[in-house]
Image (cartoon, rainbow, N blue to C red; front, side, top):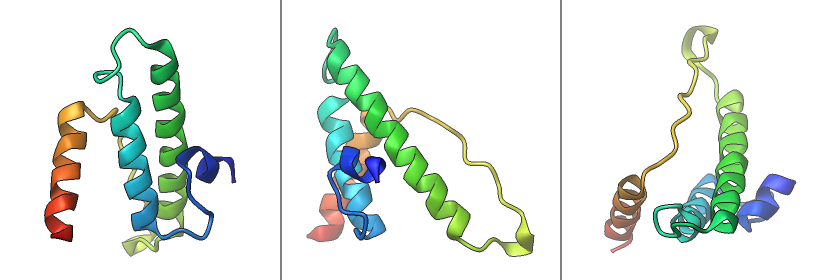
Length: 94
């Protein structure tokens, strides 16, 4: 339940709602947007960790072909990645 609280969503939220909340918070607290702000960096890491945990749980519940589960690489998103995702989401909603 803590992971949902960190992202500011309800535990019954859809995956799209969780991703939207994560992207908004990640953009707000991203270290590139808040240089020399240790508090924002700590918040970003907490947000990233919560999203990673929820994403891992989602993948565990998704059936895989052949019963094999491929490991998901852990990569900290760059500011450009987040901006591209935000732009794509805006285009989809228009």
